[in-house]
Image 1 (cartoon, one colour):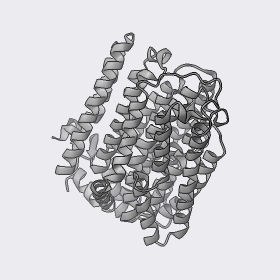
Image 2 (cartoon, helix red, strand yellow; image 1 turned 45 degrees about the vertical axis):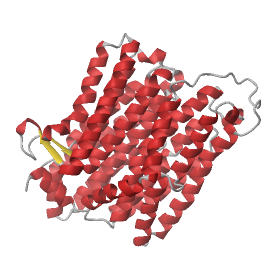
Image 3 (cartoon, rainbow, N blue to C red; image 1 turned 90 degrees about the vertical axis):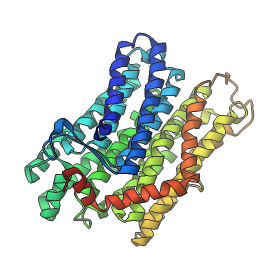
Length: 493
């Protein structure tokens, strides 16, 4: 059953290739996209359940044994993130036909959609650093195409910044991989981990670790490397913004989680203490950005940054409670960010503007939108019993167990400010008199609400059903703290 590991990569890749041939027929493309996304979700669910029951799935492609061949590794962490990715893909696939993409759909939107999912899934599953770089490039190439679809002037301006930053970080990434190979003679992550442990992570390896962190932090939009993200993520169509906001930064943070729990875990006083400082600053500056704008799309985009800060906080604290919190928060944030970007896309569409100062009284016309936003604010801020609360509770538990009181206080204050930043949208856009927006023209939201309800319902389930989901993330955290298990499963020792 090791061939299961390749399915999350092959299925979206084949879907993209098939959709190229149907590109001129928009109706068939839309239908096939929905079907393929549902098939991908079914496979992701089956793979998750199989790994949960039978343990890590390792595929040695071409029968080249590790560390000589290309290795795909689906452990519980990878399976969980692949499942989260496919849940987002389904929501976006059903939202897209109603999102005003008519001018973009004929420019291979749907093939690029699946190429992006291919790259993201491959990054979660690959077992070596070089192929992590390759899958990064696959998802980035797809994102370059998606961000410029439509060709508006603002898109082209922001896409130039987005492309240049990512090209530079990719250049550093491949350089860092070369340094790793020069230092330990392999790019297989399991064997790198084994050799780094044998030499007790010497100074040159710690330097390489910081270089890799810089690369991943740029892609994850951590402080101070987040300046490229907010405007780049709001200029495309809401579907594309949802894919970017939910998935792209999470691949960067996953890479940090994987590399610094498996490989570079000997010099915690240098690397992981540094992560805690970066986490705190990311929370502070991210939420300041969210509070400083009246653009509802920018508010959501800026809120990506403190969320990444919460996840890196758990990696920095590096105990089982904190790591479990990071994984729980990562899983739910993928879903809630997709829901929020789709939701504010609908709000901007019905209001005819993204500017809060020009909105008011929408609750009288679109009550469902208002209450979906209200619930999303509670999820994002971590109000019980929603999923954001469960992740943050575990993070705070881990922080206090390690006497990291300062970062815990920052996390609590940031949560309140995040809540205010989203509730501000509810107050200004939805409260008010029925006729406050005099030029408001009622528009149909058919097909736009259901995908948002689907994603937000998942975040509610993750909170209410925490009794079931917590043991999964807790076991993953314990697994990450024992890298020998990963090494033995790959190298068959």
